[in-house]
Length: 141
Image (cartoon, rainbow, N blue to C red; front, side, top):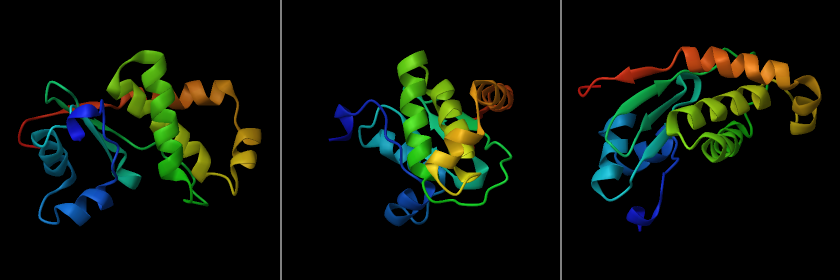
């Protein structure tokens, strides 16, 4: 079934449950070996790892948020990722969008509070911060 998906968005914990001996990037490569075109692994405070269709790997750092509630961070990441993918068509940029979404949601007690506390200028600033810190990983990573 994986070959039918454009991208898989597991967490590092999800992958660890399937492949406990593999790190997040090796597990993402295992997903590709089994048919996934691309994988974006959420690694919590460490950000995310993007393994694109060409096999290139990217590290997208987390935004240094003042987290007070982690509930919903993964869902916010996925939602932001999908918006970013729709707007840009680029997996790495989409992961940056997801990172920003997650950073916003963890700084509030509820989604409504998060939406009331942050505006478009803040979102653009966070996106610029994260995007500037993306790094390409080598083959051995």
